[in-house]
Amino acid sequence: MNVTCSEQLATFLTQIKYRDLPEAVIKMVKRCILDLLGCVFASRKMDPVRKIADLVKFYGGNQRSHIIPYLERSSSLFASFVNGAAAHAMEIDDVHRDSVTHPACVVIPAVIAIGEREDIDGRKLIEAVVAGYEVMIRVGEAVGRSHYRFWHNTSTCGTFGASAGAGKILNLTKNQFVYALGNAGSQSSGLWEFLEDGADTKFMHAGKAAMNGLIAADLAKKEFTGASRIFEGGKGFFLATSQDSDPDKLIEGLDGSTPSHKILSDSFKFYPSCRHTHSSIDAALSLFNDHNIDIKEVESIDVYTYREAINLCGGGEIKNPYRAKFHIPFLVATALLYHRVWFESFDESRVRDRSLLDIAKRVNVHFDKDLDKLYPSNWPSRIVVHFKEKKSVEKVIYTPKGDPDNPPTDDELKAKFRENVKDHLTKKSTKLLIDSIDELEKLDHISELFDCIEFS
Image 1 (spheres, rainbow, N blue to C red):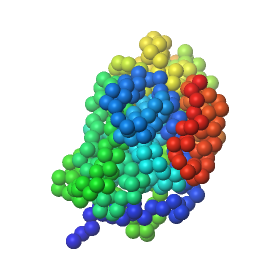
Image 2 (image 1 turned 120 degrees about the vertical axis):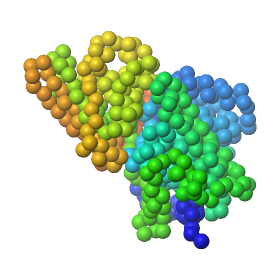
Image 3 (image 1 turned 120 degrees about the horizontal axis):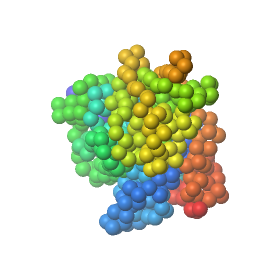
Image 4 (image 1 turned 90 degrees about the horizontal axis):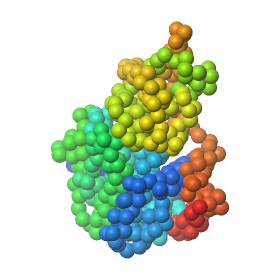
């Protein structure tokens, strides 16, 4: 009898131990947790996040885990839901290129919530994050590019990652991990249609993926069975949601022949917009800095990029500020006019700024087959700025800031964290939180992470 993909993943997950993790992996986990918490606090004043938090308060539940943006408490289930939504709401959370997923906003809220409930230490948290990232990224890589046409990978693949991370905290057996993955797959969902309206649904995707993964792990602990061939089965995840899946990518190297730490290939975001826009933003900012572009002298701008970037972010009507985060012409215009893309770039006044929108109308987005061949290993963009005096300048960006090939320093990540939380946390608690995560492996109780927090 052939060993299923879930069984191979399950065996691998039971073998993850803190003592065996390389220092680089432990450091990367800390980076991901710090970045994630910055994203969560940055969203605490957003209306959709508060609505979800108010809803779970209405539902009630035992108060074992922190709803992090407000330091309220709820059940681990509801805490994972709110924290996942909050983490994804500002579009500044991490991203993994090859899997086209945002792992932190699903995996880390799930493992922190259940970790507080189970009163784990920092080392166990690190193990769980590694496990969750590994599974979520592998599923995203294996499901193929066609999946992304309709399905939001962060949500669909994230449910598996959350179940793996939560299962690691619960010390699931091999069989129990198989059950957890099977039931995670039957809850896997998340459609892109929300983008047409700029709806709040995307935040819910991350929260529900975290929540559903936690449910799958908790049920597995009780020997609640799940499909053993949820990935490759005739009615499984790959055949149901993809036309070009590759199950071999899911299990490649799990036998130990190629040591796997997928978290090391994660990327960090430095603009609060869809990652598909970042190479275009980087290119526009680079052109401005190199040529001191006077926007009044610009006649038109051509952006050449890959298919997925165009499908999600190529243009269309900007119905609200959130839709602007998925709009390459608007973001290129913002970079050239204001020389910065940050939270204020998506104020209501900006998306109604006639001078900015006039520049955006001069931005034309084109498909480039050569750049498309590089995706998803690279998310590239080439920009050509044409001037009224009939000259032009251009820039190609293959790896936007924050990618493994263009990584941020520790100081840059900490500066981003401070920028994210500056309007929410005191300087003292900001420093204490950074210091606590730097020494995460020394924490006896992960709830201690939140003991130092004071709102400004």
